[in-house]
Image (cartoon, rainbow, N blue to C red; front, side):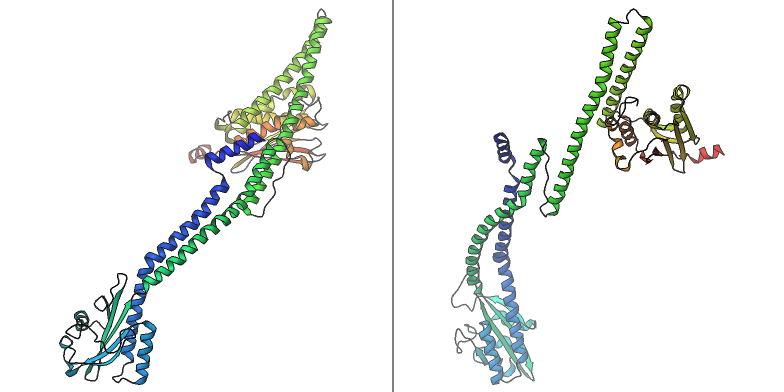
Length: 506
């Protein structure tokens, strides 16, 4: 146990645990979000704030000009004062006597109608220069830009590096008189706002980091807990214990639990099959070996000088050795097929000819034991497969039918074809297979659990057939009715003839 813990610790030191990585990812994501927030506040906020403030002042200037009718009424003054207070700005409305050009305006010929400034008082001149009008203000008016705005520092009494003055203005003609509007607003709130945001963000950042570290640890531990539990259960499964992986209510983990439970079930089946296989093989090996030894001793001690007895005893030894050879060859064949070392040699094969050749090998059963082989074989069925493997498939299926057919000793071999498929069926008239056992018959050595010595074979024939059919990409199956016999079948796609071959045949 201590060794396993040491290995886990070593893996964590080398690659890091899943929980630690998940924890780091959560904390990292929080830090990235905070970094984006800081960048947004201190880089994008300045530009956004300035643009918003300039639009706001420009709109106020337009609104003040639009509401002016040429007379300064109490209602209009209230409107202007309210606008000044709401936006912290200075508003001046004036006209030039004699309708002189704007460039000729001075403090002497300008008549100020409204001058509202909550910060600097009402009697301060609009521009601290000899001329009444600022050059840039006059330039925008002369260009006829409508409602305009520009930045300047010329109005600042107390210079600040983080602030500037925004000037917005326009002119309006009422009758024969021209009226000029000038709105001046200091944009200095940004510094205070930035300081406030910075202080709040520092506190928020510290709080977020602490919360992220604590909660992400809890989240990471909760997310990875099933993996840790599954790892512990899997180690027990590796020791051969019967285990169950429990679902936890998360789709991915539940799918993993189902897969692991299925793997555990398959391992249990494989282990049982391995034990049964070893027991059955041991049984089949022990009996012929015992007989070989017994008859060899009889030849040595009893029948050595009796030619007739010696010959009988030698025949028994030869038969048992043949049985052992068959078993060993089948085991080797199955191992080669399953490991992939036996590769198919795919080529054109005439299925009808191959079936005929294999059936001829069983002629001795017809002559000596009275078996009746009924064949219904369609002509010229060309398929693509490994011919040697195909012969082995047919031989095993017919041999299986011979072993299990009924008292009438009838075995039927059919070959039919459609436009695209050739179908082979091998039928017997035996006791059949129960529906619950149909899937088990393809397992290696399944027959051995209920086999009699009178049945010839290793018990691996159908398992070999199944694997050979899979290698040749054939469809296969079994149809059986209890007490009415069994039919094993497989299908292979026909080789489609070319137009030239069809024409030659006609």
